[in-house]
Image (cartoon, rainbow, N blue to C red; front, side, top):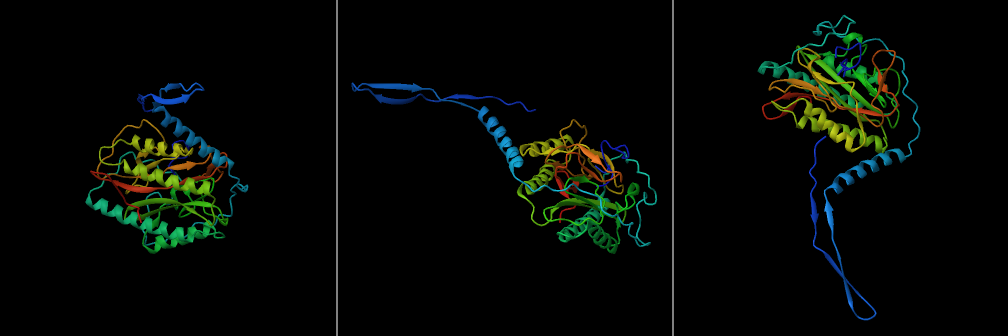
Length: 359
């Protein structure tokens, strides 16, 4: 995912209260006997009242305890993310086909139609997404303290081009690299540079390939070395949010179910869901309608069999407000809190959704 933002002025569009019934149950009177000094028994009756309100109260207390735990855990202060040296773009062999936007620094317009595929198109999407998934899996094996994100970019670039594909981010709206690497508080669109990953970091690696005319897009947040438990929990819950969102997708389902399912799960753990960046339709065009909102929303429209799009929730430990660096790409949380993201490209089927980027 690169270039879709619901708010960013440089983008065409990421990268681009249920009611509850209350039931009251009155239990049988509880009897207890107390003996007096005169040997007479006094029978006391008590009425036990149970209410389903308890479950809501218990859930609220559980969320509060989680937030208190997150705030109480003593974590060594981590310096804010700083930009390292950014090297020039890597060369793609001439024989590899390029997307139409390559060669222009202008942000492409959002394609206004949904991308729905026939059998040939589905085969093309499966091939591109399978390659993207393999590349991402390989990139994850490189994550360790001391490696630079620039080194990860080079390794990813080489694997993609050796497979005869083009790294879709390269040249998209002037993006200078072949992959996005978003470290710690970086929400998305991190530009690979000379900064070395540190023990305890997290890094989202976002891979998109253009193979035989089709784009495949996926990302995952990886742990670098020994990561503390609160941050591990953030990463785990973010992946769970993606899984839960995919589970509601099928032909005829409404798009707003995606944001509802993600928000419900994130809020249980006290996390925020970034609203600024969205998922998107994908196929022969990198970014198209529908835009997929990951927070609660009233978006109209329904999913259609044969349609492909990405879901890519971003969760934060603190504020969901974001700030973009002067490079025009790197976007970080305003309060410096950690962020995690996971992304899959999915194909809508009659009975569910096929994860095309699963590896």
